[in-house]
Image (tube, rainbow, N blue to C red; front, side, top):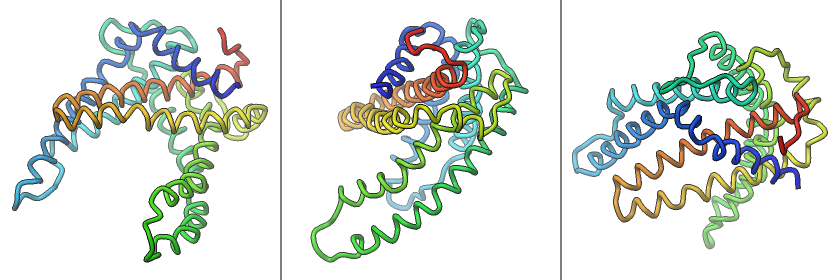
Length: 254
């Protein structure tokens, strides 16, 4: 099944280049750990009577730093895989122009996804409203499942179909939304399956951190930061794989 092949290829891309992943992504990992610790500390303080749950300046700064370092690492990773750009010894190379192109492509993609989300959310609301208002047993998982099928699955599918514009922006190749949609049209079924696998995998990898957090909050926060970092790298690798396979016509075993 090609969906599994794409996902495992992206996973091998990270695990098989662990040294480069650490050199390129260490800055993002440090920021994620610091942000999780800051948020965890605020959650503990907010549990004290009389304390307000307001993000501190440090948390707001770290949130912004996470956004910037995430872009920095994503662009560097795309360039490392697709054009074999050598990573730095401790920090990823800084490409301001490429990062700006990446931001613009991301905004365009976000607007398209918003256009997809709004009608699907409206339909989902109409379907789920009677269930949410029911006085009988809680629909719980049924509501979540319908919401996922009606909203998040279509949006995830559209995202992956158009996602090649992001790696293209990172390496300086012009790729329009129309071209990305056309080039990935042969992989419609595989990309649908990839969406399902990605959502399931991203949910499963959160479980250890949640369980560990019940034993030790600091260890749980550290585990969740590492998991979030790996999810980010694998997610960027999936986009890189889609670009390499459907746009550059690379073999998945390469």
